[in-house]
Image (cartoon, rainbow, N blue to C red; front, side):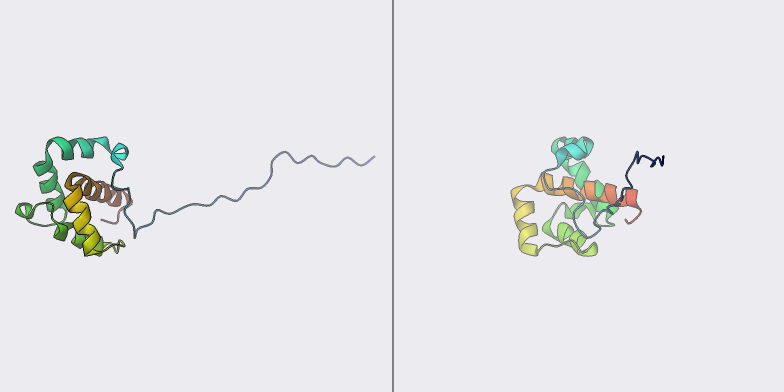
Length: 113
């Protein structure tokens, strides 16, 4: 009598997903991905603005402007427009600044900042 071996596990294909380097690493209102950044932005907005400016080698006096967001977005080829940047900064400057800081932190962790 021939006994066939029983298959216990099936072969699986593992797909490694690389983070997209040409998009924002977090959404605009993704506060819970880094609560420390969001709390800093909420309670000490000027401090966070200076941290972001220093990380980007910009003057702290410029503040969290549309230009700062546009420069960052352009540097990393993140899709968007000046019009979109203006709307985001004008409607929610705290969220905009926090998104940039979270993105800087993530890109530093990936070694691409």
